[in-house]
Length: 261
Image (tube, rainbow, N blue to C red; front, side):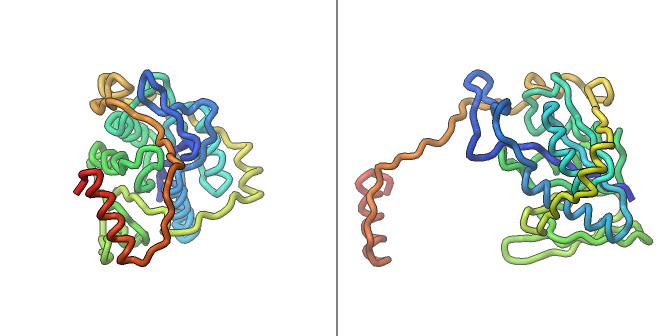
């Protein structure tokens, strides 16, 4: 079984900077990490590798510096890594990104795909489901457990709702998105760190995949950001120690004063 894991390099959320011209995130010189939900997806794939002797490959789309999280993934136990990178991909929104990744995954090959629910730099939770739609395969989101019945080619997953869980069985190829709280990702292994240094990362460019160039990059992205800005912190606050009833009255009075209620 070949499990493809989609991971993303994201900026440290305390260091986000916005390009005032393109309204996109500035990534150069900004500390980056592997997206937490994606790391949970990688751990879930590695658990399946340990249990079923599956092959785990990791795929990321990003600039050349995204190689760092691929090296981290291989140090944790991933078998192969693919960097999807090209200037033609720059500025892609979720539609364009999922278009590119779906085409790359076709080239890489997979039995199942696992990704994080969402990335902390965008919080859209759209790319995973969109990839499944592009590939025309079933999808289950908000997954917290994955088990495989290899004999019948069925995946049995536990999907989380706000107030309950649902057990879903999916036959054949499928895509799952998982939550960061589903597991505790393992540390990089000493042997893995040594082994990954000898492994080559396969680079996939726009010339290596079948994709409509009108649907990728900034110009091919239907989502347009009107404006974006970093949140400012106002330290001019008033701290009042009151009972719950008194606090509720103060809040109500303040809201009424500002004509909010």
